[in-house]
Image 1: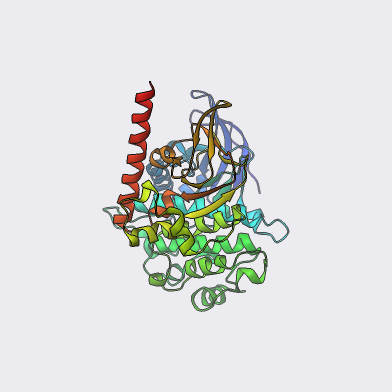
Image 2: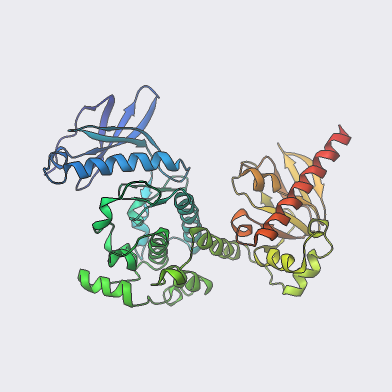
Length: 426
């Protein structure tokens, strides 16, 4: 039986209920001090009064607020305030207007385009990498805990049962069965050691479900589901979506490995492979042989200090793109952080609808965004038919330390030369 919404909780005016779960309700509320709407997550009073579980649920609320505050990532729902009292617990969170969870996109009649799914999972992998580096394992990653905003951005929510691996205290909750069974990793389902790779497995399950509209592991009972997760392999994605590139099967197979040593070792590794697929889906590019790629870059000043093996690494993690005249390559204000090297033809740099530069073979663009990860300050168009070499932070981080150092030095040299030329002109 539904209960009436309170008029006010703490300093927050209640405008209506957004959702209700077994332990808490979420209300649309107003923060008059900051002049903004918020989502107020409020624990059910009967849960807090429970003689056995009351203290545990207060701790969960405290952990959720603490972890969300620790992460502070644009793709994690922000926590603005929290109140943890004996008989009242609430978390004031960022309100996502006109947003929805990914649950509805796991239905076979509502599947998203493959390109969009890869982009979503890529973003989630980057968020998880950020969390894992701070010692936070989500432990309950599923479509219901991933929000899509009206701008098609991703927000991961509900860190209430997250594991803080760098905590100095023992997490008593480790003895319990935490998470949603369908999305659990083998080590979660068997109550073994949980690490960042458990989140990678769960993200692989979400990935599979968004692509196919069906769970990779099934069972009509918990023991049957447990057996499926720990013992069986799902059918390939390409069996259900013939237009999907086969490399997706390889990526998902690795994410869903039963043994952690065979799984992706980090969420960044997962994101790195996805970035290559995203480029393949985004650009209908002509295939170049390894030798042709070497020929295109061998005499460029950017690579003058690279050894042959470092050149091979750079080629392996880069995307080679062919673009026609007039094609938009970078849009002003875009937050994508790749940089590009012109391999043939020329490109035009435009700022506020005014042409400010022409770049030719061997010249770079986008390197400032690569270094600072800030929005693009100008747009770039193909001024002829061009070949480009594209490198992203995610891709370059998967090369050796020596190769990464070469790339960083080459970028710094490029920026230094550009500043020198600007000084001379001024």
